Amino acid sequence: MSENHFRSFDFLVLGSGIAGLVFALKASEHGQVAIVTKKQSAESNTNYAQGGIASVTSKEDSFDMHVRDTLEAGAGLCREDVVRAIVQDGPARIAELIELGMRFSEREIPASHGAKELDLGREGGHSKRRILHAKDITGREIERALLNAAAQRPNIRIFENHCAIDLITTGKLGFEGGNRCLGAYVLDVNGNQVLTFTAPVVTLATGGCGKVYLYTTNPDIAAGDGVAMAYRAGAAVANMEFVQFHPTCLYHPRAKSFLISEAVRGEGAVLKNLQGDEFMDSFHPLKSLAPRDIVARAIDSEMKRTGADHVFLDITHKPARFLMSRFPNIYSTCMSFGIDMTKEMIPVVPAAHYQCGGVLTNVDGETEIPGLYAVGEVACTGLHGANRLASNSLLEALVCAHRAAAKAAAEVRTPVNLYIPGWQSGNAHNPDELVVVSHNWDEIRRIMWDYVGIVRTDKRLQRARARIANLQEEIREYYWDFTVTRDLLELRNIATVAELIVACAQARPESRGLHYNLDHLQTDPVWAKRDTIQRKTAV
Ligand code: FAD
Ligand code: SIN
Image (tube, rainbow, N blue to C red; front, side, top):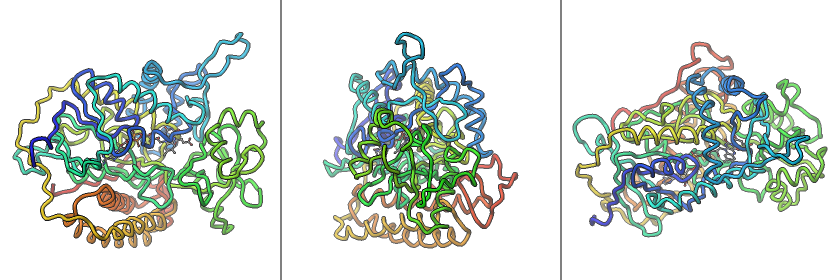
C-alpha cells in the first residue's frame, strides 16, 4: 500500500453524532482532529432525536430527584456515582451547547410581561418536567449547531462516507507488552480504497445497534460497528441484553422507523387498544407514562392478547393549534401518511430503540485499552443500568464526551511511532453474490426480533444462539474472500452484536429492567449491581 493511504492525527474520532462532535470540538483545542463518519455528517441517531435532553434547570427540580428517577428506571443496575456525576455536570454542558448555537424552545414566563425561559417537556419515568427540547426536532437542531461549530475549527477535518473497518492495536499486530490502540483501518466508500488512520487517541462515537432488529426507530447507520470493533480488539463489552424498545413507533406500511415521541404522552396522549379502550391502568399507576420497559411490554401483551398488529395513541383531546406548534414534525409526517393526529388516533407499535449496554468505560469514556475511548450510545458507563430513563442518552453523550476529551488532552500522548502495516486485502475479489449479504442480514434481524425481543425464554435464546453461530460461520468464510464493502462490514458487525446480546441475555438468569425472561420471572438480588461482561479471550 502506498504512503498516501496513511493519515496521521492527534485525535481520531469515529462518528459524527452528538458524542463525536462534542469530543472533537473540545479535542480540537489541543491538536489535529479527524472525524471519520459512515455517511453524510449529520446522518446519525442524534439527528432523529425528538423528545430532548434531560437536565435539571428548574427551581422545582433537583439533582437528587433526577438521580432518583434514573436509578429507579435502571432497576438496581446503575452506578450511582456515575449517575450523580452526569446529572450534576448537565447544566454546565447545556449552557455550553447554547453558547455553541443550540436553540432550545422557550416559553413565556406567566405574568412576566414577555420574559422567556426554557420550555420543559415531560417523559415517562420523570417525576418533574425537565426535558429541554427544540420542538420535536431536538436532534436535528443539535447536529446543525455542532456541525456549524466544527466547520469553524481549522483543526477539525471531517471524512464523510468513510466507514471504520477495525481498530489497529498493538495486540492485534503482535507487539510485545500490553494492548494499546494505535488507529483504525477505514474504508473510503467513494474512493473504493482502505486507508490507515493513526492517532495516539482513538474515540469510538459510533452510536447504537438498532439495525440488529427487524423493526427499529434507528436510521441505517446504527449497525453496532463500534461495539463489534472494540470487542474484536479485546475491550470488555457489558450489559448488551438491555435493549430498549420504544413503545411508540408509527405503524404504517410506508413509514420506515418513524418515532412518535414519548413527549406526546408527556403532553397527555393515552394508549388505547383497537376497541378504543385504555389498557395501561392494569400495568402501572403511571399508566401511559410508566417507564418504557413496562409500557413496551404492556403493548406487546395487549397485542398478543387481542391478536392486533398495533395499538393506538390518542391525543385528539388537545387543541389542534397546540399540537401543530409543539409537534410540527410528528404532525406533518403523520399527515403525509394520511393520519391527522389532531382528529384521529395514531397507530403505533414498539420497536428496538436504544442500546443500554456497550463498550465498558468509566465516566470519562476510558475503555480497558489505553488510547481507546468510547462515548455516547456505544459506551456502557453505568448511567442507564437495566433500563434508560427517557432523554438521558443525549445528556450522557454530551457530558461524557466533554469529560473524555478533557481526560485525553491531559494525558501525555506519545505519537504512534511503530510500524503499522497497511490493510491487506489478500486475494479478495469483488463479491458476485450480494444476495447472500442481504439474505443473511435479513435473517439475523428476524431471528433477533422473534427470539431476543421484548419477551424472551431460555429456549428462544438457545435457538437464536445456534442460528447466529451458523450464520457467523458462513460470514467468516466469505468475509476474507471478497473486497470489503459497507454492507459486508455491517453484516459482520450485526452478527457479532447479535451474538453478544444473546450471550449477555443467557448469562443473566433473572428478569430485570429491559431483560424479561419468562423462564426466570423474578428479579434476583444476587444479580443486582452485577454487569454481564463479554471479553474476547484471544486477541
Ligand atoms: P449517533 O448519533 O448515532 O452517531 C453515530 C455516528 O457514528 C454516526 O455519525 C454514524 O455515521 C457513525 N458511525 C457508525 N459506525 C461507523 C463506522 N463504522 N465508521 C464511521 N462512522 C460510523 N435520546 C435522548 O436523550 N433524547 C431523545 O429525544 C431521543 N430521541 C431519539 C429518537 C430517535 C428516533 C432515536 C433513534 C434515538 C433517540 N434518542 C434520544 C437516542 C439518542 O438519539 C442517541 O442515543 C444519541 O443520539 C447517540 O448519539 P451518539 O453520538 O452516541 O451516536
Ligand atoms: C422520544 O422522544 O420519545 C425519545 C426519547 C428518548 O429516546 O430518550
